[in-house]
Amino acid sequence: MAFVASNNYQNIQIGEQLFTFGMIQAKIIKRLHEAVRQESPWVNGKQLLHYAGSTGDKLRDVFKSQPAWRDIIESDGRGYYRLKYAA
Image (tube, one colour):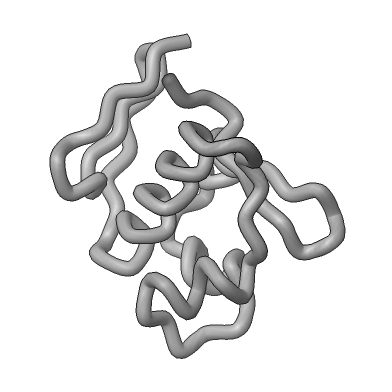
């Protein structure tokens, strides 16, 4: 499935699905997309929150306005996250 992101990652398209994110959410998506291009696509959730400037302590709280966020972000169950689809 094709992953297309706007320059600021606030608009993402995966296949036919469109997502619109706030600034903090977009920074998290951007960091996860960068990680896909490196050796390991998995990123620590606390590091993601810090990178994005979030005061929250859980990724799910940051994405609570996006019910379908788990369609593009997956967890390993131990505090690490990655994009499900990215090119």
